[in-house]
Length: 129
Image (cartoon, rainbow, N blue to C red; front, side):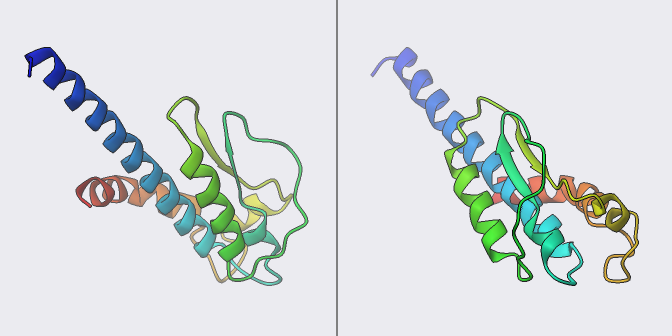
């Protein structure tokens, strides 16, 4: 084997591993945000959406109190991500910012800001696994 071929193989393997780690980090971030979203009817949890490239507008007609459908949809989309565009997690409900600002006693410290604080640890954990 030549040195050039070894370097190419290493590069391809490293790129695959990096994409896998990024997918795992994205999914863990989304999981934490979704599961920290307060639940009354499940509409707020059900309106977390994932898009690759550009987030869309509008809300969706989904109530997901346990978050499983929302997470399944996120996992399905993230699995298709090839590293060529940004991954977005968003929620377009008119009251989602109030929830983030502690409007609900179930999440007095928000959801997204807590996960952002945990981000370095999430990256470290997923990179090691």
